[in-house]
Length: 185
Image (tube, rainbow, N blue to C red; front, side, top):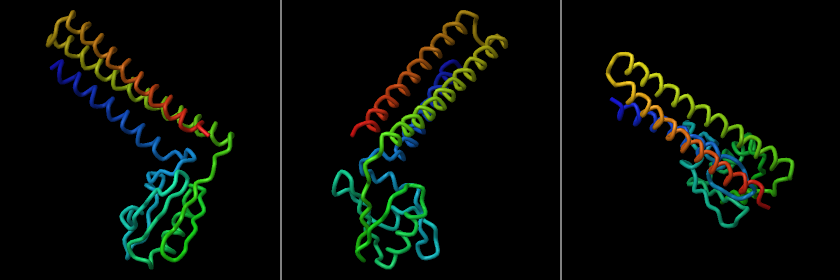
């Protein structure tokens, strides 16, 4: 029973970390990264699909993305989708390929991105603490139902706290790394 509670808690915390990493990939840091375009959807023969399912996305330079549609007639559709997105990027199209230059971020924009990343980190920490609370509630219930002893309950709660501290530390490390990446010129 205790192992099940601990495994479930670790699983919830791991999902929180994965979600944070995923959300941070969408931050524009002044470097070209194909994941910037993950949120863009295009109309591909009557179906709305993610851009990466309708085109090949490349990074030929540190500050340039190239988008090569599998069907040349899709170029205008893809260009419109990028312009409508909230990325603030201007596509250049030569009839065969779309070039997406990534402009240098202003200091003000960098600070705003850092603030946004920290907010995401705080939300992740809250979800980790919620997983800890749920685990502790399960442990207290097991103790109340006489499934585990009081000593075992305290030992397990200490273990849950140690796991929580480790995950909070991981969040801080991820944020520190992302902040350095955002502030790098």
